[in-house]
Length: 129
Length: 153
Image (cartoon, rainbow over all chains, first blue to last red; front, side, top):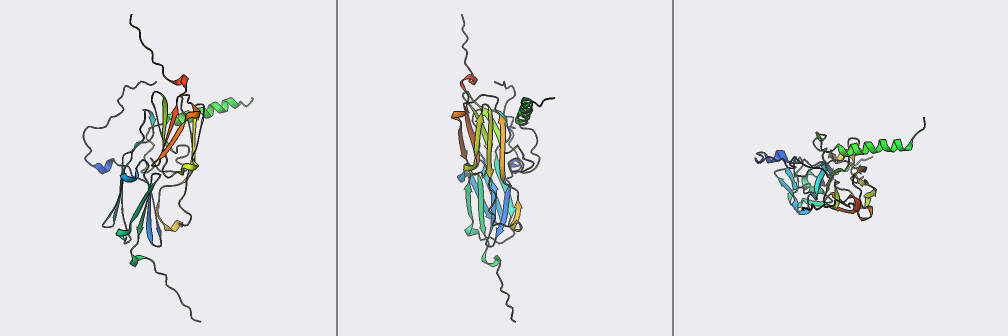
C-alpha cells in the first residue's frame, strides 16, 4: 500500500492560546412555537453524555466533544472532529428551570420554554352588531 | 460513429474516482459547510467520508447526523460503494415564519465512491452511532497483503 513519509499528525506542540478559535461551529435550526423556542443542532460524533447545554444571563452555550470511530490507517479524509462550540443570545425571556435537551443520532434538540408573561395572549375581538 | 456503452461507463468511473481523490482540499471555506447538508453545494459530496484501512478491512466513516438509520441504503458492487439515505426535514407544522435560523438542511442524498480494493460484499458491516456511520468492509482474500519472510542463508 501507500508509503507514508510525512507524519500524519502535524499538530503544533504549543497549546492554542485561544481555545475557542479551534472549535467546530455546528449548524443550527432555531424556530419558535407558541410556548417555546426550539434549537436543533447537528453534533455528529458527540455522545449523549458528552454534550453540554447551558443558559446563563440569556446566553445559550452548546458544547460537546466530537469523537470519530477512528479505525485503521487513514487513506483519505474529508472531515475531522473536534470540540463543538456555539453561543446564542436569547432575545425572549426563557424559563430556565424548564429547559429540556435531547440527543438523538447526533442531533441535539433543546426546548426553551418561554416564561408566562411573554407568551402571546390571544385577544378575542368582539364585534357587536 | 457508434455510441459505446463502455466509454460512457469509463467516463463516469473517472468522475467518481476524481470525486474520491478530491479529498481534503480547501473546500470548507464556509462556516458550516464541513458538516451541514447543503443541497446543490453538497451535491454528490454528502455525506463527507473518511476512508481508512488496516490489514483485513477497509473502513468508511460517514458524517451523517440526524439520518434515519432505516432510510440508509448501502450497496457494494465489486469495489464500488454506494451510500444513499435521507435526512428528514423538520415537521411541517413549523411555518417558515417561525424560523430564526435554518442552517441544517435536509433531503435525500446518494454518494458513490470507488474503494480501489476488492472487498467481500457479503460481509460488510454497518454501524450507526451518534450521527456517524461506520462501514467495515472486509478485504477479499486476493487483496489482503501477504507477509513474505526473508530467508537468510
